[in-house]
Each structure stands twice: as C-alpha cells, then as structure tokens.
Image (cartoon, rainbow over all chains, first blue to last red; front, side):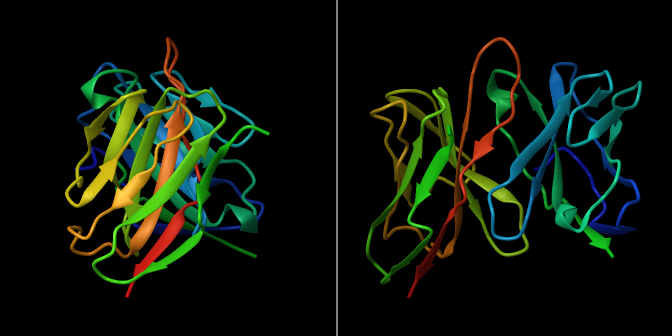
Length: 112
Length: 114
C-alpha cells in the first residue's frame, strides 16, 4: 500500500502557481519525500525530493512541514505541458524500504 | 545521451506464449526495476535488482521472470503463467551510493495479449 494520500485531481489556470498537496503522516525518520509526474502513455519523470528542508530546482519547489507529515509540490508558473499525473512517494534511501511504491497520484489539469 | 531504452514500444502476442521485454541503460546505474501499470492505476513493482546476478521479487512477481547478467541489461519475461499480461510495462534504473537519487524511467512497452 502507498504510504501517501493525495486528492484525485485538481486544476489550475495557465501561468498561475499549482500547489499539489500530499499527506504522509506515517513517514519514518529516514524516509525521503519524492515527487514524480507521468504524462499520458509515457514513463514517469523524476521532479524533486527532500528529507526535511524545503527544496527547489528548475522544475519545482518542495515544501515539507516541520513535523514532516505533509508536503506541497509547487509548480510556480504552470503551463499546458504540466498537465499530468503527479505522484508523491515516501521512500528510504537504502534498505528494505527503499523501493518506490506508487499510488494513484493526483491528476493536474492546466487550463488555458 | 545517457538514458534507458525499452523495446519494443508496442508488442502483441498470442495467449499462452512467453514474451521477453528488453530494458537497456547506459547510465552506469546499479539498480534496475520493472513496474506494471494498468489503466487508471499507479505502478506496481514486479522485480528489482540492486546488483548484477542478483534480483528480488516485488509485489506482483507471479508469472514473470527476470535475469541480470549484465549491469546494463534487465530483461523481463512474461510467461504463460501470468493470468492477465496485457498492460503497460515500465523499466527504471537508479544509481546507488551515499546520496539519494531519483529513478530514471524508460518510455515503456505496451503489451497486448490476444
């Protein structure tokens, strides 16, 4: 079973920020939060990961709450090409809990 | 460019036939994974390998087999024992080491059994 909870879908307007929430209340101390996205009929694409500090890269920002029980992926200026299924996953770096377990993700629809 | 290649993109087979899906990577990654995806569902782990000549069953290994004779290659065989083999199959790889890293996925093979 996936260890994260995401709403099934959300939408946002093109050019606006998309804030995708994720709950992971049972996260362990050694588990990272990973985000991937999958555009229809393609392989998933890695976006970002974090442990407890907020992270930013060229694709997105990841905000993790202080208690680490939830996080938010932020796409600062959503485009139509960002329409995809976004998966939030918690996983350890090594050991038995290092495999990625995908849930159903959240479908983001960016409207013109 | 480094990457992970799955072939073929589409595959059709008759019921009862074994079929092998190819996965090759030139990223020098140690770990490789096979996932299955059904329509509207997330990915489910079939098999994974952390090192050459070693692999472990994932959550849905029944009816599948793998080999890892070379670091670059991790082929998946869908056997006739797999009850519902029609699905989208995804291969992934990841570097192992001190720092965590994301997986790199291939573009997938869509298998249809008729």
